[in-house]
Image 1: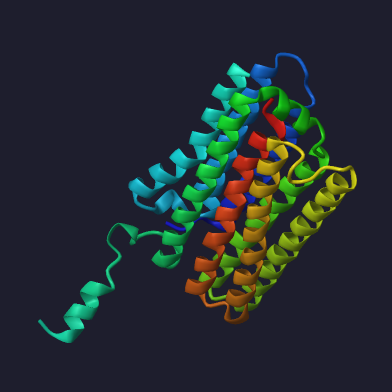
Image 2: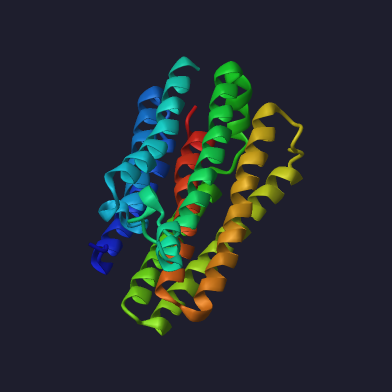
Length: 86
Length: 191
């Protein structure tokens, strides 16, 4: 099943809202570890939106969906760990 | 077994079949994702070793311009996806317009990034300022080259607006988009 234009519009609006939320979060100085975690979680959600709707992997074999989303999540998770140490 | 049977077998892409666009583009996309993954991994390890250098380097970056670039690239990806949807619906003219918008926004991303580089270089920052800036310029520069290549690919597939070609070209564009979405918080935001 192809991603419908309406769904593309909704994904775009969600991605813009998440990008603005990221910018707002970046300005917060309290509890940096929590802010970093939230920023990285938002990045993972945005990446998932791009993969499933823009790249149209929603209808692709599960193997590729899994591999691509694993790449999207791997680096942010590593980043969170290093931020926690730093 | 006839020659036609052999050709039929050779054209099979196995596990790559079922993905949108040309399977060869996916081979390129996955190799690019591995390259960017290694680069980002190196950045994360270097930050874990020298957190103070990275923290001071981050404060010199222009977060606002990078934020604008995120919005520009996400919108460009949306335009490219709409272009692919229009091409699949045999709306060639409409597909071309969406792809032009995607390319124009790609051009805006390049311009904003170059302005950001100019501010940094004007402020005395260079490749050898610190390990943070070496990795920053390498990572963002490598990504910027991919944005430029993506614009060229979109321009090529835009000419005929063939659905299969447009789909293949936009796969590369979304990969560039995805890499920025992951790269932006790691380089600019995570302290």
